[in-house]
Image (cartoon, rainbow, N blue to C red; front, top):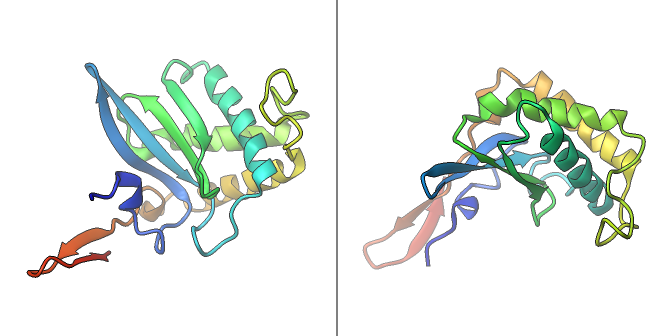
Length: 174
C-alpha cells in the first residue's frame, strides 16, 4: 500500500515551519494543503489539547476575516498528532508567499481577550479551551518564525523515500 503524502515526510527530521503538504486539483482549480508545524514531532511535547483547540478557533476566525486572504481560505484545523495545523487554500503559493499571513495570524492571538465561538451553542467541546496556553504557543511559534525567516529549512521538509529491494522488501530512507 502506498503511503499518503503526509506520511512520506521524515518526521524524525522535520522542524517547525510552513510546508507544502500536497497540491490537488478540484475541477479546474488548484488547492494546496499546507503543513503549519508548530513543534518538532517526536522530539518536543505535542501542543496542549485545550490550547490547540483555542488556537484552531482563534486562527480560523482570523484567517476567514483577513481582507486580503479570506476568499482563499478553505480550511484551518489541527493535526491529529497535535504538532501543528493544516491550512487548505485555493491556488498554489509557495510557503514563503504565505509566511506573512501565518506570522500575522499567530501574532494576532496575543490580542485575544476570549476565544471566538467557545460557547456550547457554537462549539462541540466549549469547556476544552485554554487561552493563556494558546497565547504562549502562538508567541513561541511566531518568535521562531521571525528568528528563522531566512532559514530555507522552515519552508521545505525532508521526504522519506521508499526503497524496494530486488526481493520485494520495503524500506524507508530519508
